[in-house]
Structures are given as C-alpha cells and as structure tokens.
Length: 631
Image 1: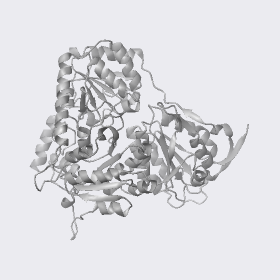
Image 2: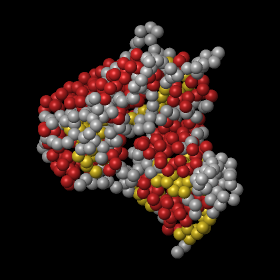
Image 3: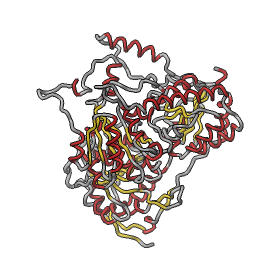
Image 4: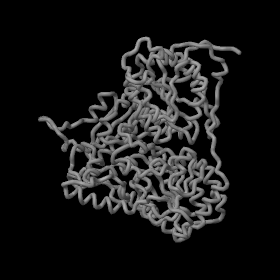
C-alpha cells in the first residue's frame, strides 16, 4: 500500500478537496466544498494556512473581515445550494473561535451544513498558557472550543493526526444526511496541525456523495391518508424541508390533484409560486389573512418539512383544533404536533401519500373559499406594492419599499434573490415579496440573527453568481455587521444592499409598547445619551468608505431611479432610505406569545397582562387525536 507523508492539516485539506457531488440536473461532478473562509492567527496560520496554500487551486481560500460574518456567508452558501454544496471555515484560537459560536447556533437551528475548523490550544501543554487560552481551574482538557459542543451536530477534537481516519467520514455523514444535517466542529490543536504521519493514498481518493431520500413506511402513509380522507378543512403547511428535498413540483401536484390549499413558513416560502390559485401565502405571526383564516378553521394540517416553530403555529394557538400530520425526514421534528407522523423525504412522502389518496379531493366549498381568499390576498399585496405617492412629509414604510424593489425589474419575481434575517422586514417580506422560483426568497428566521444579512448575501451571491442578490436590512442590523461589503467588493461579488433607516430597533420598540411598556432603549431618540445627542449616521458615506458605490434617497421615486443605477452597476451598490418605524402592514398576522409581567405599577402593563392571559386560553397544550369528523 502506497502512502503519503503529510501533516494533519495537509491531510485534512487534501481530503476536503477530494469530496464531490453530482448536480442532479446537469449530471456535472462538482466539488462538495465551494471553498474555505479563513481568518488566520497564531492558532491556524502555520498549520492549516500552509495546507490551504498548497491546495489553493483545488480548494479556494477566501479572506473575510469578521469570523461570524464569514461563517454566516458559508451557511448562506449552503442554504442557496439547497444543502447540496457547502463551505468550511477556519479561525485561530480564542476570540476567532468564539466569534463562530453564534453562527454555529444559527446553522444548528436552521439544519444547515457548515464545517467549522477552529484552532485549539497545544495538546502537549508545553507552552501553557498560550496567548488567548482560557484555563479551566478544574479540568485541564477544556478549551473555549468546548463551547461548540451544544451548538454542533458533531464535535471532535483532533489530538492525534490519525484520528482524521474516523473523524472526517463522520463529519461528511452529518453534513450530507438530511436528518442529521447541521454544523460540524473539528477543533484543531495547533501542534497537532503541524504533526506528520503516513497516510494511505486511497484515503484521498475522490468520493462522490449522494443525498439519499428516505422513503416512507407504508403504514405511515396509510394512517396519514386515512386522516386526510376524513378531513373537511385540510391545509398543507410547507417548510424549508420541502425546498431542501427539491419537492416544489410534488407540492404543486399534491395541491392540484387533491384540491388542498397551501400555506408556507419563512423557510418554505417559494416552494409554490406566489400566483398559484391555491397558494395562501405565509402562515402564522407574519402570515396572510388567507392562510390564517383557513388555518383557524382547519381540522387537518399536513405539515411538510417544518419545525412548527411558534411563528408558524401562532404559539400553538392558531390551528389548535386541527389534527396535525407531520411529514419530515427528521424524527425529532416529526414528533411535533403529536398527531400522525410520516418519517420520510418530502418529495417521496408527498408522492406516496398522493398515490394512496387516489381520486380523493378536498370539499369543493373549501377549495373555492381557499381560492377566493388567496385571490383577495394577492389583490391586497398588489395594492400595497403599487403605492408610489405618499402624502407630503410622510416617510415610506417597509411594504412600500418592497414594492419599489420588485417594480424595478420586469422579471424580478423570477430572477432576484432577496436576503434578510431580522427586525420588521421578515414579516413584511414574508407577506409581500413575490417569488415563483424556489430559492428566490432567502430568509434566516430560525435564529433571527441580526447582522446575518450582508454576509448572507455574499454567500448567496457566491452560490448563485448569475442572479441579482438584493440584501434588505435595517439600520440596526447594518451597524451590527457590515464589513463583508468590503469582502464583496474584493471578491467581485456584487450585491444590492438596501438599508431602511428607522433610527433604531423599530420592531422591538413596537413589541415593547404592545406589552404595555414605554418607548425605552430601542429607538435612538429614546436611549440614554450624552450632550451631543444621538448620531445621524450616513450609511451611504460609510459604504463608499469601504469600497461600495452608494447613495441616500429621499422618496420612493428616487429609490426606483437608484435601483436602476444599482442594477446597472458591476460593483456592490448600497441605497439608504429613511423609513417610518410606526407603520406596518396591518393585514394578516396572529397572536404570538411574549410573556407580560404579572406584577407592574403601570396600568398599560396590567392591561397587556390581562390580554395575555386571555390569549393563552386559546393555546393548544396537547395534541388533537381521533378522526377530524369526530371532533
């Protein structure tokens, strides 16, 4: 058996470069890893850094400006690739590593693959304590990287080079398994990175990974079909799992064949085209009137590839009378709802369920009601999105800006990818953004991570360079994490960034007041200030200072003109516009549980507490069992 003498880092990088996937449409063989984001420090520059340099042609290395941001970009890349391709991220020890923790949690919540390779302290302990080392007074084996354990789907610390023989196949399994998928952390002690051993050449043989689809058990399909046949008011709710399973056609076929209307989650938006007659729009707290009206009356909900997060279920109060059928590849998620469970790939599961149902269709009156409500919702969206003229002195709000963005290109609903994550915009975009292509709506709302947006947009653009990527975010998110604008310029990955400046955290300010509190510490004007007062920030000037083209506009008309210039630009282009934090799209939505203090001297808080207690009486605390027509 022939061998190669390599360091652990060289073996790791060579192995990653040998992993391949096959494009399901073209059949082309592609690298599984689109590259490695790296910020070097003393914990990884000599070991991993040298190895990445040697393989820079086979496995590109990308330099970023913030560790959390580059991990967010890597995660967004994987999401845009529907989890078929991914990236790795390497940092030094200490703050470089701990800056990845938020991203690890984000990937864990969203079930997205990313390979995290933080440097670690010396296994030999000869120079302890080294620069940036955290010392645990009771456990000599602990480093800051142990913080990754609860936010990783697989964690390993490589204390001998030979451990890669088992660690790397395990890591690849987790990254490519539909049920286990999530962040993998391999902590790399810096002395072990540099140690060499003899490696069998066949360890680096090209490996083509397949993404296996889990077929459903016949008895699960029978039970789900039985529940649906007894349903008078069924609704399908599709989540991100439907997109990752590439089940859009299966969802459309199921809806049309059986006349069941479809609602969507933040992660599942775009599975069914926005203009389909049975497309109800989003479900839940950020939901449409059509979806929420029907879900409130539903007796069976078929939840496909969704975690049934509180925003989707209205904190378990929205469809509290419905029996839930969960179709999910992840057994943990399939248990949610306490109803019929179908453990399967979304595409295969829907196909098998449709076959089992045969000619069964939902009641005609229910279908007609669904189509009428969906039509009324589309008309309302059109009305909001077409609003151009505002009364003098009135600032636009998010919905009017979303309309302008979509008007700015004749094919924007087909070609553009919008990226967002936190604040008011996720609610407005889920209601108002119109997409007819899977992946045209890229929202990180599982972790709702402020600061994801620009870095996420970079990752999306790297995955889909042929598409126009539009990043929409508030001033709060921009100020949290914006440095990857410079990275996008450096890499030639053009973004259109739209900053909606409402001078604070407008979303939480409204929530604060809805819970009876006064405006406090959210809007800049309501914060503790020095003699100079709150700053007036020029976001366009800042973006220009780090390499982008940018301008500030004052109206919807100016925004449309600026968008024309932004689309024509070959470089990242930022547009800032002042907005009204008080106005939102009033239509749609439902209750969301946010605990209100039981004791307060404020009458407004006491009133909010009474409303809260009344709302909780509608909350579903246990599963609905039995056939729908028995309820």
